[in-house]
Amino acid sequence: MTHPIDDAVLDLIYAQDPDAAAILAGEQDRQAHTIELIASENHASPAVVHAAGTCFTNKYAEGYPGRRYYGGCAHMDEIETLARERAKQLFNCEYANVQPHSGAQANMAVFMALLEQGDTFASLVLKDGGHLSHGMSLNFSGKYFKPVHYPLHYDKAHPQHEQIDYDAVRSVCMEHKPKLLLCGYSAYSRTIDFAKFRAIADECGALLMADIAHIAGLVAAGEHPSPFPHCDVVTTTTHKSLRGPRGGLILTNDVEIFNATNKALFPGVQGGPLMHIIFAKAVAFGEALKPGFKDYQQRVRANAKALAAALTDHGYRICSGGTDNHLMLVDLTARNPELTGRDAETWLEAANIICNKNGIPDDQRKPMVTSGVRLGSPATTTRGFGEAEMKQVAVFIDRILTAGLKGEDALAAETEAVRKEVRSLCGQFPMPGGTPATVFFSQ
Ligand SMILES: *Cc1c(COP(=O)(O)O)cnc(C)c1O
Image 1: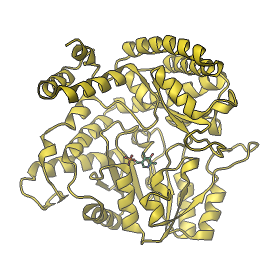
Image 2 (image 1 turned 90 degrees about the vertical axis):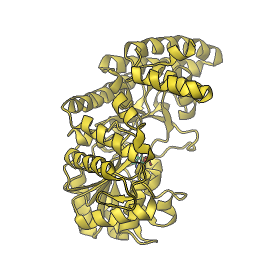
Image 3 (image 1 turned 45 degrees about the vertical axis):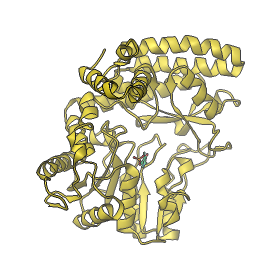
Image 4 (image 1 turned 135 degrees about the vertical axis):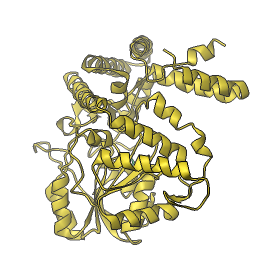
């Protein structure tokens, strides 16, 4: 399966730059023939991919629609307005800023708008599933602001083991009186109760922010409860479950917060907006507003559940006991105490299965080793995998990890066998755009 535009793009670049074209062909080939389980990745449609590669990249449009610093912005205003209107419709809110270059930039703008340097905010720590822009010491959020972290339940006997401990969120907030309470995570597989967070924010006098970078697609499709009307401000990425181009988004129902975050983003954090990406965001939001998107997100959740169940059957432990969304954290040590996230990531990649090592709650190993992997279903679901294929993925994973434990020879043989089967499965479920690489490599 070859998409004519992908072919044409590769030919065009090859004609003037074979070196760069070879790298592009290699990446197209890799994506086409691997099973993508990284929970924060997806396969954008050819329309979205190529919308990001238009002449909108040529244009400076500093400012916002109707108030630009440069001439020639009529179509910039049209596309930014279209992207905003669609974002508002998707997330059912009053105001949208579509200019953040990424999720981290969106978060930085919100922090700059709502906090003073040194102010306290409350969040989940990175190692429990938070994001580095939620207070990690090397990040702006940890360097210029004061994070206090709320814990997960950590008690194997507790029914909510490894889930948000809302009583603890409340006591941390009542003790430290943060100006901002942040919910929304990078490695958390359960439903977030925004109403509970709202009640805590009201009690301690904090503003409530949700960072829905991971679950945005589910939220847009009604497959995860909406942060509105509970949250004062919501940030997200556009390239994860939402399946758009790489980028960020700030959403709110509060005109003052809208104005303050607009100013904080530009000129506070960013210069000229990436208009080609805003063009692609508009196209992606248009796709997400179509009826098929709800069905896609339902399948994303069903596939995550199927993968979690199959891995549990093979003896792995899903942290927190399961998944409500598109991802899961897998405790490998339940299958065998010798297994590490680092080995699993490396061994699986050799068999064309891509995932990332990830610490599990209270992980005794270092972040570069870890006891777990994080797996997600958005990309495989986009390819058309169903629950039967997710079960097969679990079998592949267990075959590789079991062989890895036996030693190098067993691993080499099993890697070869599984890689062949993975390539064949990927051939049955081509990624959007397909792979022009075979054409390229035969040149
Ligand atoms: C991915 C993610 C981000 C950051 O997104 P970038 O686009 O990589 O900057 C922010 N917050 C959360 C919770 C995320 O998972």
